[in-house]
Image 1 (cartoon, rainbow, N blue to C red):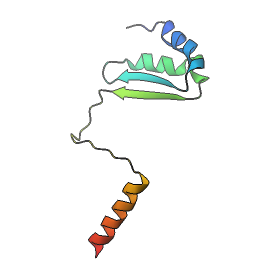
Image 2: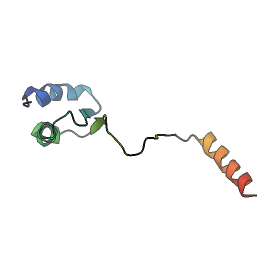
Image 3: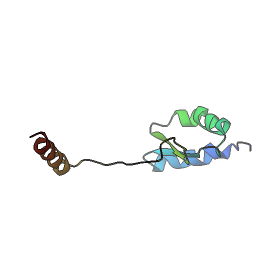
Image 4: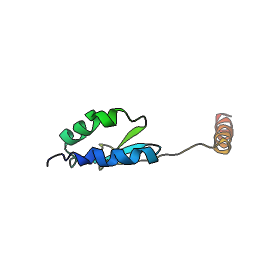
Length: 86
């Protein structure tokens, strides 16, 4: 696979209309050389908000979870912990 110049150039034209730029990659599919060339491109270096999404990543652990806290949830959790300690 070869890197086409337009890969970064086309996206760069749209950056003035966006708040951030995301590079979407996939493990074992996106060649590292392509990603390196994108990240080293002078136009990309000038961007302030750049993120990378890695899709298809394989992890050793098979379980996955997440949560977020609201003030209400934090207070509930603290009350539960106090009760458990008694």
